[in-house]
Amino acid sequence: MKLLDKEFEKYISELEIAERVSELAEEISENYANDEVLILSVLNGAFIFTADLIRNLQCDYQLVFVFANSYDGMESSGEVKTCYTFGRKLLQGKRVLILEDIIDTGNTLKYLLSEIHQQKPQGIEIASLLLKPDAYKLDKKIRFVGFNIPNDFVVGYGMDYNESGRNLKDIYILKHQK
Ligand code: IMP
Ligand code: MG
Image 1 (cartoon, protein in one colour):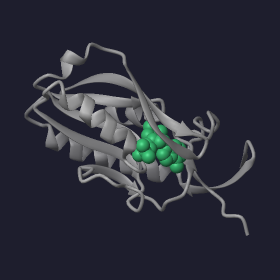
Image 2 (cartoon, rainbow, N blue to C red):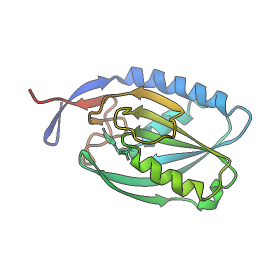
Image 3 (tube, protein in one colour):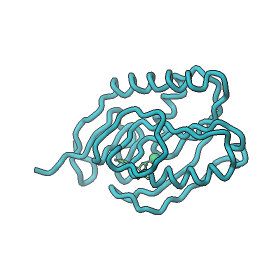
């Protein structure tokens, strides 16, 4: 499958994603069974994961969004920009669950964690559909992980390559040139 100038191949199917997302929703619902959770969804990439996950949740939750951007093409630019769509004071005293599409170096997460900590939440946990463990550099454990993947570029299910491919139902991985 060609997207812009790159060849990708199917990596995780729509069905596998749906099954894993519903398992994650079950784990998350159990974890927050006795307390409301404030879900902080990280846009743009996490919008489809968020929509599917919350429809499987069985716990009380509040949902808010933050835009975060650090990627330029296939490389993390290192510089993170965030834009909150709500008053950040809302985070105070809450059990916050950050929802990410994919965690690579952890650079975006590190930045978000420091901003959220300033609001003194009761706790912060992270759920990410995908994690690249070989690239991840932080000590903070990712509590809920959908799939561990190799250090390769992926698209689909909300994730983009230069704004293309977000609408793909399956997740695709960059094909290595032979
Ligand atoms: P990090 O800051 O290096 O952890 O990268 C996190 C963000 O970069 C993710 O939330 C994605 O938006 C984007 N990203 C990282 N890896 C990929 C990828 O393989 N495909 C698409 N986007 C990615
Ligand atoms: Mg993201």
